[in-house]
Length: 410
Image (cartoon, rainbow, N blue to C red; front, side, top):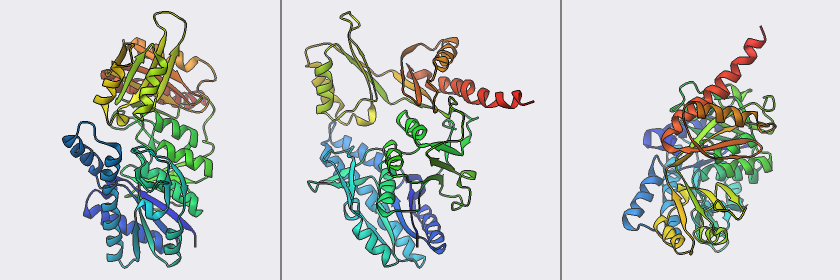
């Protein structure tokens, strides 16, 4: 029998009733003849609540101890879901990340999976059991408990699917797929039937609460089919894109089309003329950069500007103290945000940069910086204008451009 991996996010397992609904869906999958591995996140806002509790104890909690604390959330979910499956007549067993064979590097809070050894998972599947795995966590080669960062349960699911040779990996949440923008910000956002791996990864890295960027990268490398779907929706049919979003190598859009708009408010811009010391301090505190701009022209603008995510600032007060001691002035701008457009080939010309910049200028939104990749254009602007800018760019690049072919075809 084929193996499938299903991942259920925190909102899908937020309480006992929702856990029972997930158990029913798992048993429906078993009834279709599949062997099932289920990866679960912590219930509801458990991870945020535990993090807030830690900060009530310490303004700068130790990263190792944070991992020990935060990994408890998924253990609760996995045990309760296993019980719920058993109540429905299924045979289930729960495993932590380490018991499942998730081996990571030696970083805490944002570890990376380096290997999966799913021997115990495979053994239990062969015995006819549903295996429930705690997402978001693993064990380092030094036998330390580690966590994979925000959205790490996605990575757990995809990595497990690859290691087991699963037929597909289903990422279930409270929404029925990935949208052209956050529907809470843009009422006219629509579900995207199919996305390429690269487009999805760029959406995730630029702030969209879709799939974890590392998970998408892993899926691309291993060729894993991913279906993003609603927990309350049906199981995948012959065309999964009809009621969810399918990730695959190529998306059915012409090159240069914008697939989606995303934004991020929880970022900070750090600037210093002493590039080497700034990067050294950020590395010491395990703070990766999202975007980096270096000017080296021996003028007053000479120096480094780097955008960092607040999610990685678990020791902010200590970090800022260390930055103030590097011997060169450091600017800390906590009033910015980022809005991005994503799509394959959108930077083949500068047209979309000019069009987006002109649209922002027309509503008096100053742009502090612009960053690009092969699949993304990002504008750094005032955080208070983010939602307004997101709606505007969605209108310019999604609503208008999608309507144009219909007009031209008449």
